[in-house]
Amino acid sequence: MQIHELHPENWVDNYADYLYNYAVARVSDSEIAKDLVQETFFAGLNSAKNYKGDAAERTWLIAILKRKVIDHYRKINSKKGKAEVRINYASGDEDEGDWLEERVADPFGKGGDATLENQELGEAIQECIKKLPKKQSLVFTMKTIQGMSTEDICNELGINPSNLWVMIHRARTALMGCMNQTWF
Amino acid sequence: MKISLEKAKEICTKSQYGEASWWELVQLNVYLFFSKECADFSAKNTKLTSLCEQANLQTLPESDKEEMKEALKKKL
Image 1 (cartoon, helix red, strand yellow):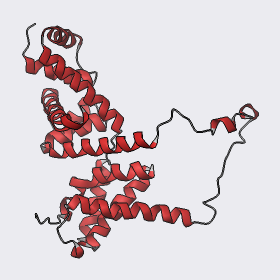
Image 2 (tube, helix red, strand yellow):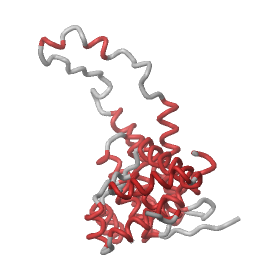
Image 3 (cartoon, rainbow over the protein chains, first blue to last red):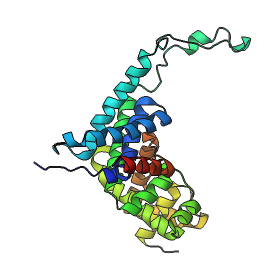
Image 4 (cartoon, each protein chain N blue to C red):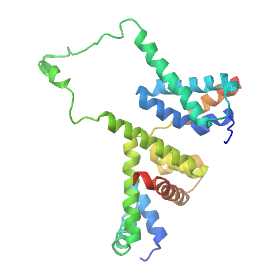
């Protein structure tokens, strides 16, 4: 069996986005998700001596993050008064009478299955992005996920638009190949 | 007017971001009409765009990552 090693100096570059997506999908708050990722890295450092190398570095960090997410919910649920359901619906007469209907479950809303599938999809895409050459992965992420303009990316990375499109094209072709079996 | 398959695929990728020029789109559409390979690629490319949207991926801003790196470095 392969023995894995920890490389904390590369954690942010290699896993921050992956862990962040995992966290944000579970806590629905970008600031809290960011804090949880940071705490995960610190906890990883603190327990590095217990790492046996059986699991891959990322799997191990995700296991720590899972605990952090559980702890987060425990903490907010244990605060007094948080269990109360508060409905602020006293903002004008025009809404009167509508509030009950608006709180009825939407049968066409996104269900648990869809959410779970989107999480799996997100993880699969992240997994494939990780396999891309560094520069392709960076350009693809800036353009597709962060939605940056072509001009800004070119300025930031010191490349011209032709280079950018070649890199994005290669990245997308590789991603299609990587995700082909399961998602296409 | 004639472009290579690879160039057509590149334009196809550009069009996924709405950044292909009018002339490039004309060239691409002519290619799509005649080349099944290009049409298949185009369909997959469109599917990839919709999968990326569906996954709603997010990344941490670079400034936050730098802060994290600094904080980790101090603890190392």
